[in-house]
Length: 108
Image (cartoon, rainbow, N blue to C red; front, top):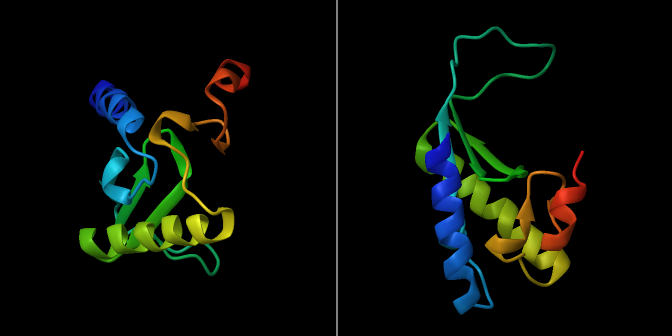
């Protein structure tokens, strides 16, 4: 788990040198899920999950790693389209997505 936070910190430092962020600028966590888990209602578990570290709401799913990453990129692009810009990796928090850094301590 600490590896993801180290990568997030390095991406945080790099974020001070850019103003327009792409998916490659964010720390990403890829997980393979047990696709043999029975469905819950109309929800079916997909084999791969990709999410931006400390911004769990920004995620993508797919049958392959590539599909999950592509789905995550689509979600990030949609966020950028709706909000005009993606938050800097330094401004992403596990509380509720992008927010000012000073707000992180207010997460409950």
